[in-house]
Image 1 (cartoon, rainbow, N blue to C red):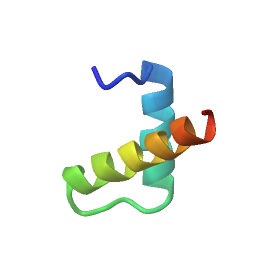
Image 2 (cartoon, rainbow, N blue to C red; image 1 turned 30 degrees about the vertical axis):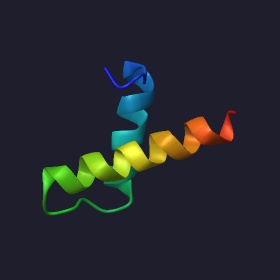
Image 3 (spheres, rainbow, N blue to C red; image 1 turned 30 degrees about the horizontal axis):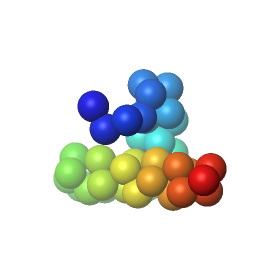
Image 4 (tube, one colour; image 1 turned 90 degrees about the vertical axis):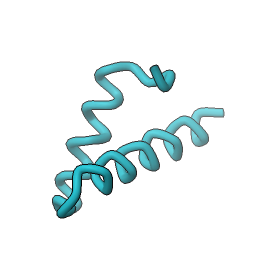
Length: 44
């Protein structure tokens, strides 16, 4: 795993989709991971 809980990962994917669905799945995953990383950085 990447160290993110399923709930946090699902929330990030939903937020990325709400911001506009990209054409490629890889772009969606990249956006979700960026959001998770920024959240984790804010919690440090």
